Image 1 (tube, rainbow, N blue to C red):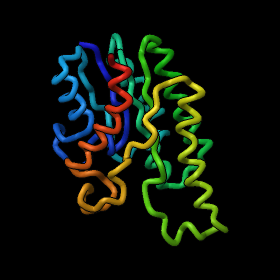
Image 2: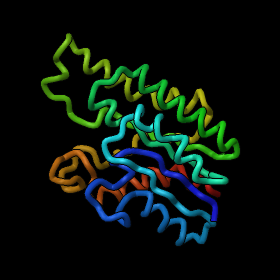
Image 3: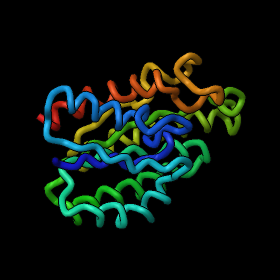
Length: 195
């Protein structure tokens, strides 16, 4: 079976859900239904920033002789903390470079994010600076995908963000139903990579 490594944060890990309810597990169900020769590995760590991913990437890559597909989903926690977009971009580029170096044959899918929350009153601070940050944050993923010529999922949380019935009580993390939609959002792009 050819490995698909999902490398991300709580959105990938399936925060507070059973492992079988995470979106990588839901994607495995789609793979099995189609009898495709792939196995999904979930390396999501709740709370992880891109800096944390940068520190962790080599140990994950070293566990595999070969990685067929690498799905990178990180950045939401950077956005929440207001980490400079330049820093987030550099960390994600480092991870992409490490994947290329260690597993040059791997096909890569970059998962885009938009600012995870309605910023509310924060948006008016600093003369609308937070709105500018949100725009830069959203744009960094597409720019990275184009620069590195990798497949791109525009927005992981499309159809889930702000939908109370699709999120846990914290209003931030998708519930089991929300994770199914995340799986569909990723599958729209990933299916073409696998076939």
